[in-house]
Image (cartoon, rainbow, N blue to C red; front, side, top):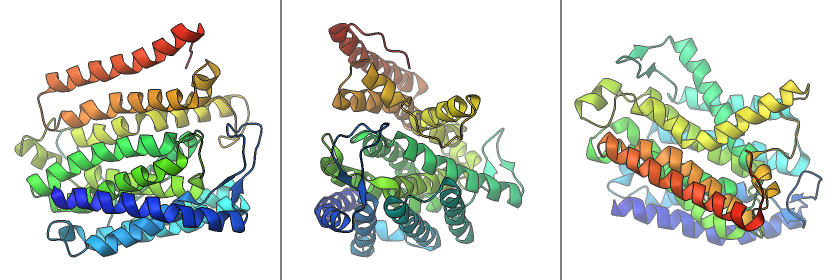
Length: 364
């Protein structure tokens, strides 16, 4: 565990130190977010936070590769995740500067998923009634869909200072806990790459958060949301579709369906926001990617919450879905249930306290 904590600290430190340099570069090259009707920020703010994260990611991987435990994660899968991450960061950086159209970005995300497929990262089976082997072409299609949906889910919640990085940090923490249990405690070699990438992802989010928290001095941009989404998707695919559910049951690692539930629980809030946005826009005859001000964070803000409180409430709801499912891998179900009640109560209290102060009714 000490090697993973060291890796997290290195990633966080590098990201924190690199970001100001990329911030100056973004300002010089006019990679900035202007002020639009749907935006919450009131000042022109540089983007390319994802570029800083990618640099910190690459440097971290170079620094920790010779560590005894962490070094075991280096291989074809880790190489594929890094190459795919590099591709989406390049795509996102271009979008941050030139505002690419939605079709181009979707095509690029599909190509990034293709890089993962080439390196053996794809859904091979699903832990349903034991092991459900799925045809290779269906697994490849599911892999592409998971990558694209996860990237866009992270992108959709990146509309409030510090929100996306905080949600992804919590999600990554849950993924890491489960991956670490599999890779280190139980010796599942396929969990090595996601355990390393998710702990680095936590560090990147922690290092970037001081620059991105309200009032944000820098945005992650599409380069950042695509990077975070890609790594989360690759981790989910490896942990869900490439870890034998029967082997988990034999090792008594929580319920046999845990790998299937974990990605949905961890990404519940981003996926909910994405789903509601698509339904809302298509039902009104608009494109699913047409911007609006009806996301979950917009509604919380409209009810009288500050930006910081809105972010905290959504952090708590993310934890409410994600943490209990992860706890189920380590402890009896009843303990996970108690954790869920505690977190839900905390989230409700944070929400209720603001309503009492402002006298507003929150409908989300």
